[in-house]
Amino acid sequence: MSITDNTDFADRGAGRSIDWKMPVAIAVLLGLMVVAPFVAYPIFVMKLLCFALFASAFNMLLGYTGLLSFGHATFFGGAAYATAHAAKVWGLEPLTAILFGTICAAAMGAAMGIVAIRRQGIYFAMTTLALSQMAYFLFLRAPFTHAEDGIQNVPRGRLLGMIDLGETMAMYGLVCAVFLVGMAVIWRIVHSPFGQVLKAIRENEARAISLGYRVDRYKLGAFVMSAALTGLAGSTKALVFQIATLNDVAWHMSGEVILMTLLGGVGTVLGPIVGAGVIVAIQNMFATTGFPVSVIMGAIFVICVMLFRKGIVGTLGQYLRQTRRDPGAKE
Image (cartoon, rainbow, N blue to C red; front, side, top):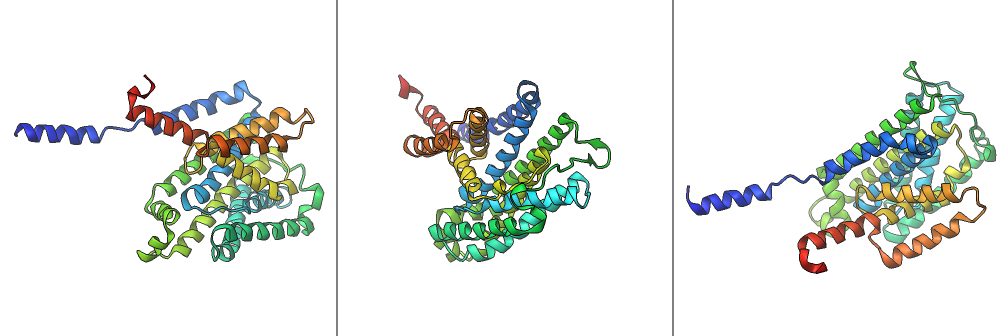
């Protein structure tokens, strides 16, 4: 073998160097999930994980498909109502109730998506908002939701008939499992050929159409998947707090998840998790002070748009890439 061949072989080997960023991030996340309930209030951590999954599911639609939906609260709260009713009235096993809520969210996503995907841009967003408001009033009037009272005292039950979810740590284990499964599904969808088509639609929908892709079908598929994963988060939250209320389906819930995604970083895997952590922590911190939390979140949104439009994770990633590309830039 010649010297040139040796050099080429070395270059190819260097090009295939292992990227340790994702395994390290997963290891850190798992470590934090193990330690978190011992250093923070477990219910707070479970709420954070539910909203992190909610934001990640929404990011799959906005960050990877380019569709801004103002109606995701319908799937989050609708699944919470379905799960709460199934667990309390029908007496279903907790995991079965969660799956039922997830299926209901997917069905609602299909119904809303069939109408909404016929529009683009701001018209798509406004269509989802209008449909979400219609769903809100349906939930308000539906007998099984109990209007403003909501479905209260939802029993957590026994997981698979063996594990008592009334124990906080047992419930925490279920929430962690649901979160990890949901995130694994999102990661697989994003990095599949289907996910690559979604990115192509986000970047240039006209070109994707010219290449022969049935764009409407892909967008509808992404919408339904995002709705189902959102429902998974809402169903789990209903069991954690043992209640489902109108707040879960109100329009401001959709606004919160949009803020979480923008704050953490649109189109990144870890961004929505970070954004959800920041927003949930702020809400928890100011919950008993009487200070209007909406004012703080509005200020955060303005700062995010003006100073770091790529979000916390996106901006940090850009800085690290620039530093690695030009190590002497800071000197």
